Length: 284
Length: 352
Image 1 (cartoon, rainbow over the protein chains, first blue to last red):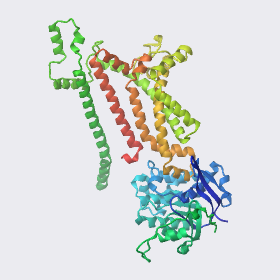
Image 2: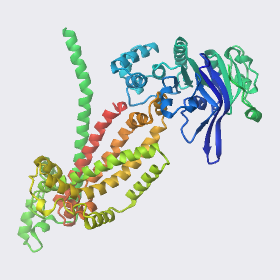
Image 3: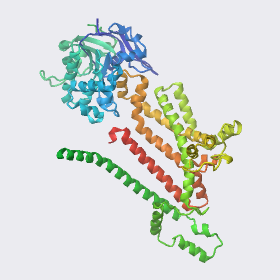
Image 4: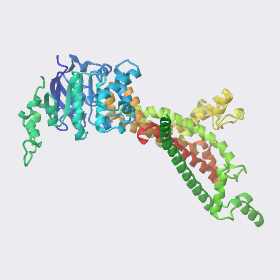
């Protein structure tokens, strides 16, 4: 059975000008693999990640035939039951640790809180586990970092703290929503490698949301390409460069490549027909 | 061994030094502000076209009496010298004599200020205890009926003149329903029963264990305190709402939800922690406002507080009393500012 099965997912926002559809009927599945979701801003990739956790705030609406986690439809759960899914079974790392960590709480308290929410243990045990987890994300002086406030750590360190915090309850699925976009290029790799290792070790499923095609093709097994709320193409990550959809081709051709230098990069020209074409199934 | 002792000592000194420095800097800035305040109030008091000698000796006094009093008050000396004398006196807690009742101004203030303090504190407590939760709920349930009600409550609070609400309150709750005590701090037969220790009757009667007096004092204070509390509630709830709205859309709130926290934990455990600093400023400002003495409320409820004291003094050209009162009010403002600055350091790790 797949870890996650999403069938005909829609995310809608009613506005005065009518209903805005951010995600328009996409279906995909996730096994114990690394699934990339790529697309430009506004393509609905972040909304897809948040919809799985049912974190679209009203008046936004999530509609789907089903979002099944190991056969259990998440849409049938009460909000209270959903809370035991969040963090404990599905977790999410967001873009910028500067904003996603609480600025007035010590790093240690925030990590321990994530552990204590899902484990009935004492503070001493939670502290021990947090230190181990910080060590697992290659933080050199975990004791000191536990006492630090978010503004006292660097961006790369902040994102590793975030990963530690999200993985400490041992979830089955991690959604990484642009986890490195706010980071310095020099630490992007390091953070991704740490995340990749942990996900592999634990046999988790990873949904890696990014606009960076190269990064995705390197760190994922399978890639969904989204455009205007729909999946326009699905392919294996190592065959991304053989992609056929004109949108994917356009994205690829707009990137400079060291091995094929060009004098002039292509500009992506959009065809309105793309957003009208039905979604491609993303099932493995 | 000697080496570790040494490093420990150095570490202690290193951790103490910035703290001590902070206190010294704060004290320094307070003294400078106070000096400026004293100077400005003093100069304004002296350049006013009011003859303090005439106020004492009366219009029909002889020239020699006039001159004697003129000299006695030190008015023949240069302004700066007069100011230094005044400064010296103030530093010794002496604000001079009130021209109206020939009593030391400091004694008058010690009598009227606790009345204002008691009223303002209770009013602020009401405003904070109701206003903060109301603001938080209004922000969290944005657009719901509770948000609409909070908006109307605040709007009425902002725009209704307090003398009207005060009079109506007295009419309804004292005159018609008889639920609360009338104007004044106590009924006549409860007066002067408990010894005055703090000047705040609620506290004095509690210390003395005289609950009859306590109940009577409470029935008198509750209406004006609620009224003042309503005004600070209006302000505090609106500010709390907008602070909370800003925080609830922050990314760390999503993080807390992703962790699997309940909405209540998210709101009070995460978002609310981040508005404490801003909230302190708002509460301190509104408290300081009430401590200044709300003249209209004090007059309507015959409350012998500092607001009506200064106003009466001003209208009868009692400049020593006006200066004394102004200095005390200024001191309160400065102290509250200092206090909220200190609280910042406790609540916001980034300000260290």
